[in-house]
Image 1 (cartoon, rainbow, N blue to C red):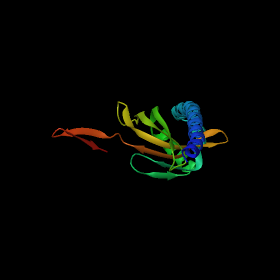
Image 2: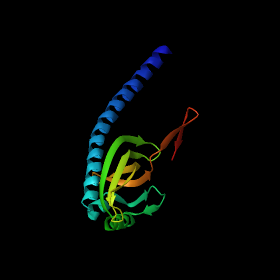
Image 3: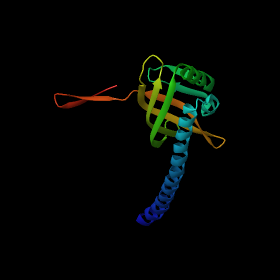
Image 4: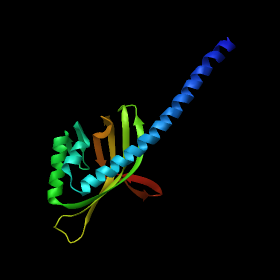
Length: 168
């Protein structure tokens, strides 16, 4: 019986080991292309290139902003950005921190921080808007696309009686 178990387990362990190396190699390549996508999005935003931004979302993408407003479809998302560009002279900075595989989404998820510095014309100084983002990414004809984007404010931490309290 032990010989049967040993002969049965060895191929399974070997298969798992080979698969884990393949996944690591794939995620390294995906990490580089996801970083390139983040840079391309940042560039398109800073150049106010609505066509490029629209093309970075899937047809039925969902975007939820920091205030919880939900936009559905790349056309509605592009219209949102068009309004932002009309009302603000803004610069976007993205810091992509992670790329992880989500079994729930069955897709890659990128996450990180963002900062938008804008001069709305109402103030003499730039008004920073900062937070965190999480994008569910898919591949369409070999190109990354955002299927779902959720922006959230930074969590604020404070100390109450020696305990750390995190507020959103």
